[in-house]
Length: 563
Image (cartoon, rainbow, N blue to C red):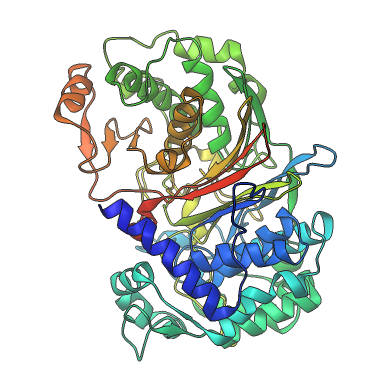
């Protein structure tokens, strides 16, 4: 009943919000050939408005990303970064636009330890030392200039209007603001996310006029509007007053990088997914490569799920050993995703019993990653498509809004590995290869993905930190087992997760039967039920047969916020 109520709420509110702001919604009827799935109805409506104006999927993705920066400030925004996976229908070009944040040149490991070598509590998650150089604005400008049809003055207009005129906050915003009320009360200029100093109630109209002005500045001046001039000066001043070490050159030298996506085949499907510095695409390729050597039953059967868990264990083990920003570290990607390597990695999987993680080769360092992110999936009538995952890291980022900008800054420095014995926010092991270096990009798990088979093309992704990989993996396995895609089923199916260390299977609460748990435990897996569900998957499917498109948003979207 909860899932139905949440889906109904989303459908009702998108109609009322569209009426309130005059945005255009999706076309109706059996022959809808464009579709959008995003984490907030207003962002979805902004995307459809741009398609109605003659924009393509890339223009719509810009509008959606900017709108999410306004309506989901706790998860994403202009002060963060992300990965945009693009497919251009006209010539088949596929590219990953890397707009990940970078380490400022003045910050080193010494900023995170005291004179005795002890970690400074909170240094990587709050205040100036937590903030990496944002990439989202540069990413939007890059996509507009190279792939879009409409100018930024048009594609950023819906978000600008939302910021200036305000929008009624939903249940999720109200709950997350309450959860982080003290943080927002004490942050640097973050009180604007509150109502007279307290967490607002559902329906409160949140206005962000300074963010509207920033969006207009980017629309008018492009890259220079954010990374140069008074806006850049305001960010540098705010970060450095809070203990950071930003330099002007960190902003002016920021570069968007176009990267070749990770591509591979699995049981007749062609899969295109994120490249480094996202670890997600490599992990996905490794898991499916290992699973191809086994006969699988249905997802949800203990015998199949045991194999998936073992594949995840080994893929995350390799992440811990090898993966980092490829511009700084030589990573053997071709070998890691090869069929031969997959066979060798799967050779010691026991069909009847779990492998102990400590029996695998030791990992020397630890890295941990947050779970607050957002995702959007878009396909237009021509077949152009975008899967984009955007983040500012933890809820409401570093708690810094530079005066006069409305920009909430990220705390992505927490995604670097500080030292082997220093655990971070979440228990995900990594490598010294992921240590802080000037202008380096921290490792990520974001996994925007395309899946193409005889049925059509599936466009999907999710937030959830390390759990993103297992979410996307399970959805792909379920999709390929079904003759007709059930998008609602894909985004709402039960989820489990394993990431090598800690050595346990994490499951969503109240989603698995006692019989399933007993069968998994009998194979030697330790099981831990999470406190809450996780993820907020956004999926779009365009049929090959008739070009009809459909979209589905995760029903968990209104009930999760800190995974």
